[in-house]
Image (tube, rainbow over all chains, first blue to last red):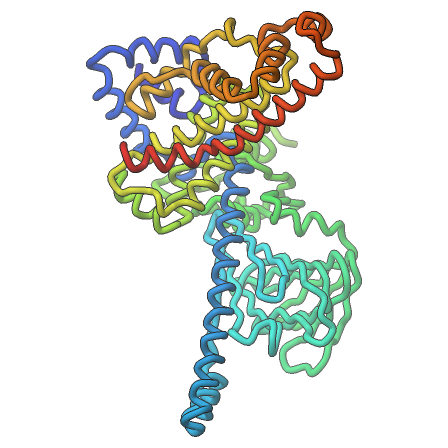
Length: 332
Length: 196
C-alpha cells in the first residue's frame, strides 16, 4: 500500500491502483495509517521536488501574486504621497516654518526599494514607470523613491531583462559599480554579478549607450542584435552580433548552455536549481552544449553523464563531478 | 503543522502557496481529470483556484483544513465547467449519467468522508435551474435538450412554429447560463468556512 500511496500523492497511480486504494481507505481502520503515510511522504520530500508538468501553472500563479502585490504597493505609495501633500497644506495654514522643515526633510531622505529573486526562482515585476523587469535567480535590483519622477535609475546585482517604457525626457539607467547602461525605451538583458569579472549586455530592441565608471557620456552605442562584453579587470569592451534569444530565454524558464566549460555550467545550475556543486580539477574544462526547459536536475545530470565522460556523486548537500575513467578509455 | 501553514497562507506568503501547490497539485489534477479530459482546461482550473485562494486569503482560518477547503473550491469549479459544457451538448441525458467511482477516493482523502458525486450534483443543479424556467420554455427545453427529441416534432405537438422552439431553447440557455454565473462557487465557499 505504501508505494501506491506514494504514487497517488505524486499523481502517478493508475486506475487500478486508485481503485485498490479506495477499497482499502473505505475500511474503518485505514484512515490513521493513510494520514501518517501522507505525512511521511510530505516529510521525505526532496526540496528539489516539483510536481511534474506543474511549472507553467505555478509560474502563472506566482506571476499573479507578484503583480497584485506590486500594484498594491504602488497604490499605498500614492496614498502616502497624498497624505503628505495634505499634511503640507494643513501646516501651511498655521506654521510656515514647520512646513519648510517637513519639505526639506522629505527631500533629504532617500528611501530604497529592492526586488529580489531567490535562488531557483525567476521574478517578474513592474516598476513605477511601467517598465517591466525579469530578474534571474539570485539577482537583485534597487531603486530610490524618486524613481519615475526625478530619475529612472536602477542598481543591478546579478542578471535582469528589461522592457523599458519610452520616456525621452527621463533616460532609464542600469547601474553597476563599473558600467552604466543608458537607455531610451528598449528591451535588453544585463548580466552583472558582483562575483563575475565580466558584464554582459544583450540588446533586443531600441538603443542603449554604455558608460564606463568615470566617463561623462557613452563610449559605445549598441544596435539591436549586439552583445557587449565588458571586462572589469582590463576595462576592455568586446562587441559582436549574436542570436539574442540564447541570452534572454532564461526569463521563459529556459537555460541555454552553449559550448561552455563545466565550471561555468555548474554556476548556471547552482542558480537555477539552488544546488551546490564541486568539481574535480580534471573535469573543469570539459565543454557542454544543451538546453534546459522544465527538466529536473537529476534528468540534466543524467544527460550530462551521457554526453561527456563525467560522473556525478551526491555527497551530503553537495554534488561532486569527477572524471568517469571507464568512459574516458573508450574515447579516442 | 497545518495551522502554521494556514497562518502563512493568510498572510499571503508566496512560499506557503508554493508549498501547498507542490503538495496538492498532482492529486487535484488527477481528480479533475476524472471529469475533464482536456489537460489545458484542468491546468487553468487549478491555476484559477489557487489565485482565488490567494485573493480571498483572509477567509483562511487557522484551524480549518486547507485541504478540504481547496478541494471544495476545485470541485465547484469542475461542476461549473461541466454545467457549461453540458449546456452546449446536443442532448443532456440526465437519466443515463454514470458515476465515476474513483472520485470517492479523493473525497475520502480531502474531506474525510464520502459525499455526493459530481454527477449527482450536476443533475440536481440542472433540475433546479430548469425548474425556474417559465412553463413553455421549460417544456421545450426538457423535451428537446434532455429527452433528446426532434425540434420539429416537439413544435408540431405543441402547436408552435420551429422558430419559436429554437427561440425558447436559446432563451433557456441564456437563462441557465446567467444562473450558473450567479451561483458563483465562492458563495458556497464562504458558507462552508463558517460552518465547517
